[in-house]
Image (cartoon, rainbow, N blue to C red; front, side, top):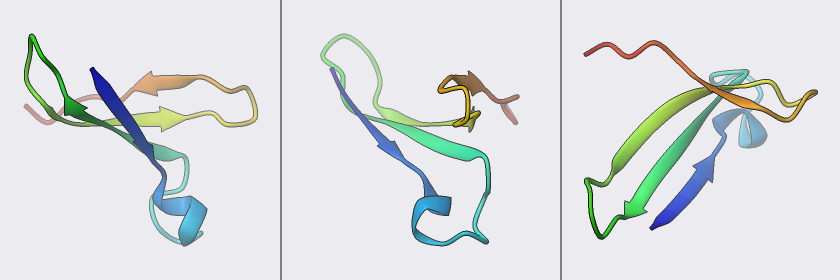
Length: 53
């Protein structure tokens, strides 16, 4: 499994502050895709955000 972490606010402070994307790039036994998470960077955890689906 390959998971990439992307934070828009690292590059542009106005874009999605406090959010990050976990991108599942490769997954042998499951689907690939992107999941948005809430990033509490002062504490280090990431929490799942409510999904639209």
